Image 1 (cartoon, rainbow, N blue to C red):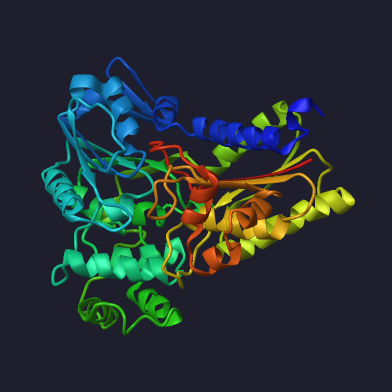
Image 2 (cartoon, rainbow, N blue to C red):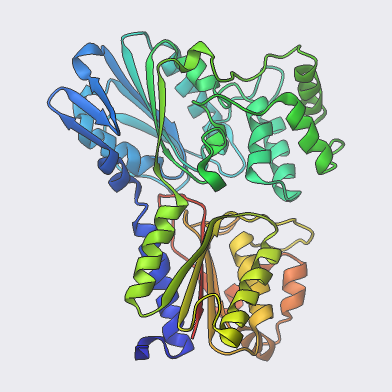
Length: 447
């Protein structure tokens, strides 16, 4: 074991180095370049080949936190062959573009900018014909950034619905099921609008299992959810009385057949549609694992598909750390346990934080007083909940430091105020906008 990983300070530095190594593995522009190339008048996307001479127009559309650098690389590849383009990105997640219009909009709660941009996207593809090619760039955040309410619903209805779903602890696939059924663009409806043009989507996955119909609420893929599923989710979290009455009425109308369902597999809209995932959580974890081994750790990937309540997940990771110290299992020290996915927080307090910061706080309470343990949890998009932090870093001394400063960790956890807890300690993970998004990366180091 190198001297670099013998103490807490060195381990904390290692944890950050491992995290940033994972981030670099999912840089969107590099991913586009890896999967797309142009040779004279032919465009190769994965295993597909498109003869550009056969297409009158090439349109570029998209939405998400990673979409700007994806669009920049598409411009590098296609240049003036791009007829027109428009993408929606989260505020601050930008790149310099020439032929593709970039609109900054709200996330996770949609705003008017997002609606105007999404409506412009719909108008653009509605004018696409059989001899046109549409390239769609999708990444995490695309759901909030493509808000086109179904007729009879308003943007405020969507905003209120998303706020309620985010606060009740619903999983992302549950949130997106409702999003799709109150939208004119999600759940395959964007593909319907683009038909009969050829449509290719390049996708960065921010959902567990990389399910295409869940990423950004699946605007270009068949939808497997139904209005009935939406009502089941509403009742599961007992939010029927909290949701806007217009939304509940819309869901009921869908169940009774008064509102058309989202398009399913076999719909003609998907005859000329192809979807390709070019970035995912496991790619970031694999690169992080490689870096951990370079730094002298025995590395093990726990899972890239972890969901559930973030404090419960934190307890499991803390238990693994104690097991390594006690028995040397599942791998001996110096150990690096890596995991990904996306946990949830049920908001009961009035504080500020996010799932990664709350994970780190819950873990800090579990590992207090143990031997050398460092835990870092961060969102690969650079923002954790409604904060400017990607996450936080904690170790076996975090609790004692907090108590010395007169902080009550349990109070901060109960009040969902992990942001201010770690802010006072100087232990927030601040990356700024990363322009990528493949869920979360958690790093557990034990020496």
